[in-house]
Length: 206
Image (cartoon, rainbow, N blue to C red; front, side, top):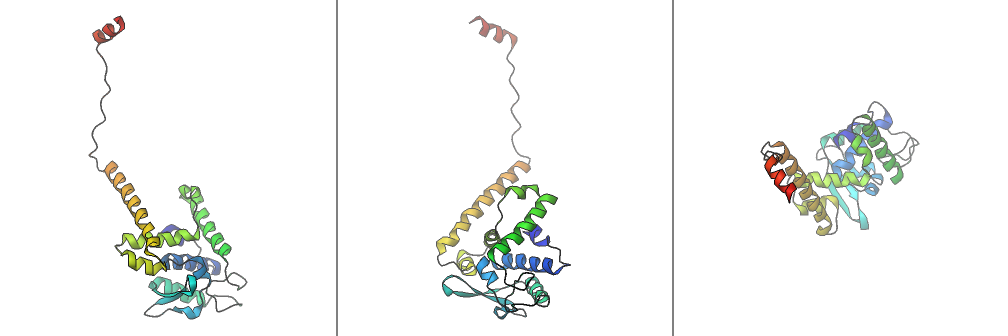
């Protein structure tokens, strides 16, 4: 996620928008519909920094945001072109981004990273929802309890959030296996057995 978020060229208006969008999605774990529907009135960019997300079933939730995210959003606000100024994330015409637009932005930066220095990414399907999953996994790994993560993500049921527990255990098993391989305590491989010549002669005589 760090590589993806860092990829946009922040010297350009579109690059700054992409950076802010990816940072916000990872920070908040927001659904794409929540992010593209977000308005400036939903944000508080000074302490306490927070956002109001409008989730499924018209259920709103308040989430804190990092200072870095708030600073990025503050700068983005001054860079927005003419058009619908109420929406936070807009295209070059000033119109709100669509789901396809967000998917294109993410795919563009993932492809750039894959071509440059992370070829394994080319074999993975990285969708905007992956940023939501990554947020949940990071919260779980930091020790956050499932009830808090459920409220953070806006899940109606704790069972939905519990899926990330299985993901986390799988990651831990992979990490443990890697640790074992690099721990230097694996038994030496068995030496190949070479039968004595008289044994070979005996076997051939049978």
